[in-house]
Amino acid sequence: MRNLINKIRLASSTSIILFLLFVIISCQNKVNITNTEPEKEILNQLQALKGKGILFGHQDDLAYGIGWSYIEGESDVKRVTGDYPALFGWELGGIEEDRLVNLDSVPFSYMRKLAVWGHQSGGINTFSWHPFSAVNGENSWNTETIVVNKILPGGSHHNEFLVHMDRLGNFLQSLKTDDGKNIPFIFRPWHEMDGSWFWWGSSTCTNEEFKELFRFTVEYLRNEKELDQMAVAYSPDRNFSTIEEYKTWYPGDDVVDILGMDDYHDFKLPNGTDLIVHKLHMIFEFSKTNNKPVAFTETGLENVTDSTWFSQKLGAVLNDPLVKKELSYVMVWRSDPRVHFYFPYPGHPSASDAKKLLDQPNILLLEDFNTLISESLD
Ligand code: BMA
Image 1 (tube, helix red, strand yellow):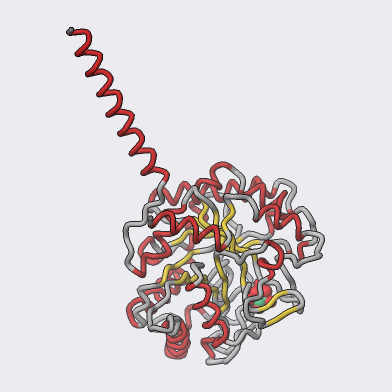
Image 2 (cartoon, protein in one colour; image 1 turned 30 degrees about the vertical axis):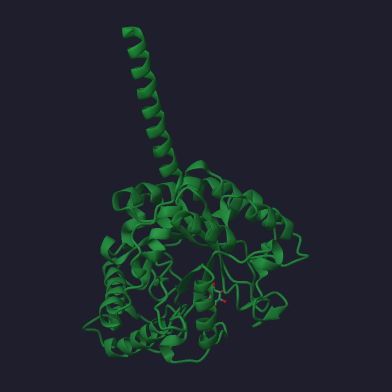
């Protein structure tokens, strides 16, 4: 009798344990999005999808491509893969001068419309900014004149810079749905500061001036322009070999939401993919201290001159086991037939190779992204 009772006890405790295990495993498989505040939407999505897939992005994807421009619904990524990217990159250079089109001729009113469409279709928008200087109106690549210390508070051109900031902020504020809701977005100011090619780069301002500029920009947009729906990305280029070097220009956890890196050049080196993976690993390590998503904010091969670049080079990076687990998104640069392109078009020798990489279940295009998010909300 006692034996029988013991057996029953054992059987029921085993089923309880099995049931609990089942509950734990099902919960782990579910992407949990608990905080639904609008300003946290993007960060929550990125955190929730970590390890489930890497969002694929393309700059100016919906605006123009190879052999077309400003055709509603068009996209080179869609032409090649059958779906839109999950992340849409846009460029704001020129907004600070009140221009109607950006420095690459994209009308700001059209950009706004496309960004709203991208958001309403379930994608994420990220904005870069190559501003003209508030000191002399020169473009971002002019490093002849010192700009940063003149536009900071107390500097000779601070007031002119404030006019630029207001115009930038007004545009970002205007990113709203038809029923007036602010759309969340990523802003990636003052990128590639570790290089010497921009007026905010390492040869034309001190590290401390840079940090002050970054902080001032973010605080102005958050406090004066009330852009709570903005997530901010920090993205040096490849010029770091330790995490301390990566943090040389880091303005602080309170003004950065996403830890990024741009890197085109390392891909051209013989051991380039290993170098890139190593750099991303260092950023993952840093992200453990502040729990911020990590992104490969810009990359690509100019004019995609290697027809296996997507599967063999970018693929080698994205399929590294830790990168698969930790990276939130990757974005390739724009495809402008007048200048250069970074994503192939149908018929291009690299088209099937790019499709092969983007067809991988862990590389997320718009529909994949929507599916994962809706599963997480069930
Ligand atoms: C660069 C190039 C330029 C462009 C700029 C801003 O890398 O593509 O032609 O003006 O980005 O989009």
